[in-house]
Image (cartoon, rainbow, N blue to C red; front, side, top):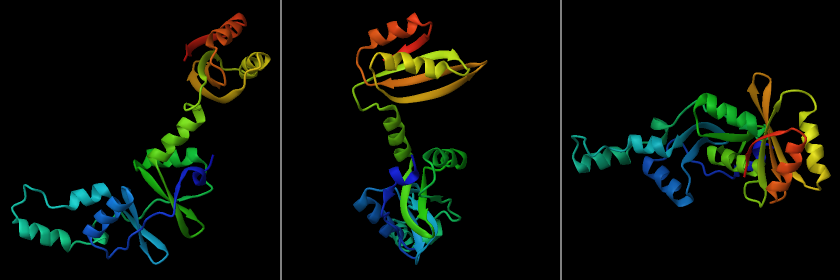
Length: 210
């Protein structure tokens, strides 16, 4: 899966000279929490709802209510935006996007096609992809095996399941260390007992089934 498969296209953007109030209004109107900041066709920053909230006058400030409003209305996006934005290509694999977000501790990435901004990919999009991978929204069973981390363990289990006429909708391998691994199957069936019996007969260790 690629970033382009899960990103939101046609992102709402804002200019660096726009007011903070304009940014709040755009976010509210379009139900978004971040806006790429554009100078012409070039992305020069990103502003988030958290940035806006931090810039808002605090109720505890010594400024009068009128002065607070004046300060707020006269602030511009360029004063609070994050510069040097990390971007990603639309053809990047989704796992790489997740790693970049984790390493940089950011919740979104602007998506570029060559030099053009074409979308945004967020943590929520990554979560949706994770759910799709596991087929959680479809009637099925999730089966976790603990096996020796060696050649043939996956294919052996898959052959048993195939022999039962059951379709494997997804499979994940999780390394456990100490030469062990989990094989996590999502199976297109609701008969957990039959699958469990067939695998245990061939000495496969089932650690979870749901």
